[in-house]
Amino acid sequence: MPNNAEKNMPNKNSRPRTRIRNVARCGATFALITLVFLCAACKPKQPTLTLLVWEGYADPTFIASFEESHHCKVVASYMGTSDELVAKLRGGSAANYDVISPSSDVAASIVRAGLAAPLDLSKIPAYSQLSGRLRDSNIVKLNNQVYGVPFVWGPNPLLYDTTAFPQPPDSWSVLWDPKFRQKISVWDELSTIYMAAQVLGYDKPDPSQLYNLSDAQLEAVKKKLLELKPNIRKMWATGGELTNLFQNHEIVAAMGWPLMTNDLRKLNFPIGETIPRENTTGWIDHLMITAASSNKDLAQAFLAYMAEAQTQKKVSDVTHYTPANPGAGQFMTADEKKILHLDAPDAYMQRIYFWQDVSRRPKYNEIWNEVKAAQ
Image (cartoon, rainbow, N blue to C red):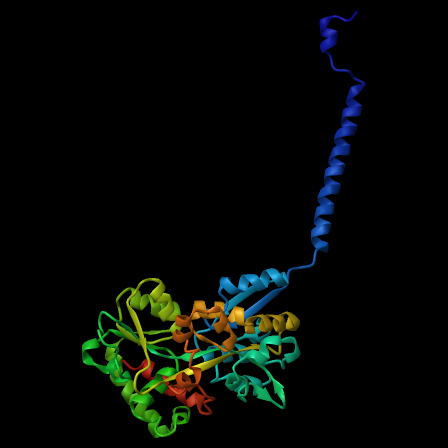
C-alpha cells in the first residue's frame, strides 16, 4: 500500500498523454481560426456606392432602406457649387463617384462632355410617374438617349429672421439697406450674380438673359455687388454654415435654400422664407450615373429607388424641396402638399427662373472672384 508521499507524486506515465491532448487542442484551435479567416475571405465583399451630391440628398432616413435591401453601403460627399462638381469630374476624380446630382446649369454640359452614362429607363419603373414638364426637358438628353432622372426642384428664396422683419421683405434690394451693415449673407456661387442682375432689371423682358449677360451688364452687376459688400457678414458655402449664421444671430437675411428653412424651423428659429417681387432663380436637380462608375447596375437600382413616390416623400421631409414625382403627394397631408406647391406646381414654377447652361461661365466666375477679392 503506497504511503501519502507516493499518492501525491505525479504519475509519470500520464505526462505524455497530457502533452498529446494539449497539442491536439492547439491544433484544433488553429484549424478553427484558419477556417474562420478562410470563410471571411470567401465571403463576398459588400459593395459601396459613392455619391457626390447636394446636401440633404443622402440622409439616413431614406438611404438606410436602400442599403438594407441591396446589401450595400452608400457613402456620400457633398458639393457646395455646381462648379465644384464639374471640376471634380473633369479633374480626374470621376472614377471616385458612381452617382451625382447636377443642377440644370451644368447637367447638359456634363452630358455633352461624356461624363455621364446613358440610362436604361426600363429599369426605372417610376420614371413614367415623374412630372411631365421635367421629363420632357432636353437638359439631360442627347442622341435619343436619357442621361438623368429628374429628382427634386426648387427656388433660391430670400430667408429672413422674422424678429428683424415683422413683414416679409418684398424685394431683393432690402439686402442693400445700410441699416443691415454686417448682417447679410450671400451664397458663394453664381446665383448671387443672377440675383444682382435681377435687382438691375436685366431679366426683363426675357429671364434667360440672366444666363447670357453681356460684358457691360456683368460690369454693372459687379459694381452693384461691391456696393453690397459692407452689409455682408460672410459668404456661405454650405447649408450648415448658413444655418449657423442665423442661429448665432450674426445675420438677419440671406439668399438660401428651402433646406435651411426646414432645418431652422426644426430648431424653433424664427425663420421666414419668401420669393420677392423680382422673382428668383432656382434649379432642377437630376440624378446621374458617372460614365466612369464601376457599379452601374447598383447605381441604376439606386436611381430607380430614389424616383419612387414614397422615397421622394422622405426626401422632401428632409430637404423641403418639391419632389419630381407628384405621386409623393399621396403620402402627404393637404398642408404639406400646399407648402411644397404640389397643389399648383406650374403656377409656382412661373416665379422661378430655372438655372440654364451659362455659355460664358468662365467670365461669370471671373467677375464673381473679383467681387470676392475686393476689400
